[in-house]
Image (tube, rainbow, N blue to C red; front, side, top):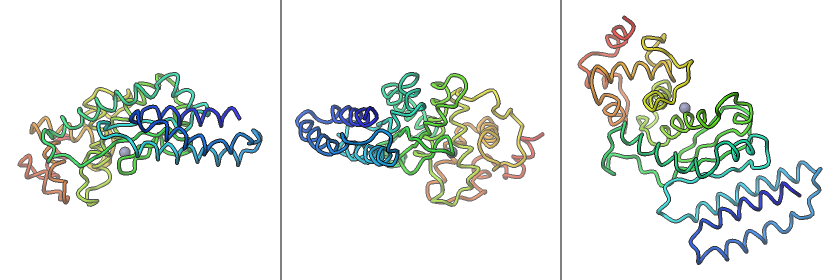
Amino acid sequence: MQKALRAYGEVLRLVRRLPQDTRAYYAKYARENFVNYREIDPNDATALDELLKRTYTHSLWVLNKYTVDESVAAINAAPNTPGGSRFDVEIGIPYTEQIMKTINYFIWDIFQQYNETDRKNVEIVRVFIQQYNGAEAITYGESINVSSIYLEGYKGNVKWEYTSLLHHEMTHVFQWNGEGRAPVGLIEGMADYMILKSNYYPIGFAKPGQGERWDQGYDFTARFLEYCEELKSGFVAGLNEKMRHDFSESYFEELTGKDLGQLWADYKA
Ligand SMILES: [Zn+2]
C-alpha cells in the first residue's frame, strides 16, 4: 500500500509540471488509474510489480505530453527501492535536470556544434532511474536508464559518479555513429572522452599512452582521442562530424595527416 501510494505520488508530481490548464484532466486520469490498486495486498509481489510497471508506463505517458520548452526530463521509476531512495536523498530530480542541461551544452561545445544543423535532432533526453540488474546504465535513442541497484551498491560519492555516468550516456544520445558502421570501441571511447574532458574521470581511468588497441574502447580509446586532439585541435569534433553518415579509418589521416597505424604507434611511443 505504501509503495502504491508513493508510486501514485510520483505520477502526480509529474502532472504538476504540465501546463496549468491541463493538470486537472491528467490528475483525474491518474487517479482513476490508480484507485484500483488500493486493494493490493502488500505481500503480493506480483501485484506490486504490476503496479510499478504501470507507474512507469504512465510516467512515460505524462512525460510525452511535456511542453516543448523542456529539453530534458528525469524520473525516478524506482522510488520505493533502496537505490531509488538513495537517488532521492543524495542526487534528486532537480539536480539531474539541471546537470543534464549543463552536460548537453558541454557535449555540443566539445563537438563544436554551434548551429542546429550540425546537431543530431534530439527532441527530449530522458533519464529513468529503474530497478534492474546488469549494466550501470543503458541508453536507447534518447532514453537513458540508470540502474537503481547500481546506485544502491556504489561505494563513495554517488552524486559525483552519477554525474560522470551521465556525461558518458548523454554522449551516446548526441554523437554520430556512422549510421551504425563506426566501431563500438570508438563510440564508447568518445563517450569516455567527455568524462575525461569534463574532469569527471575516476582514479582508475587509463593514463596517457595506455591501451592495447586504438579501438579498445572506453578510457583507453578516450586517451587515444585526447592524443589526436593534442596533435590537431578540433580533431574529435571533426571525427564526430565525419561519422554523421559513414565511417572509415581514413578519417584519421584526413584530419591529422597521419594514418591510423602511425598515430597509434606514435601514441604508444
Ligand atoms: Zn557507453
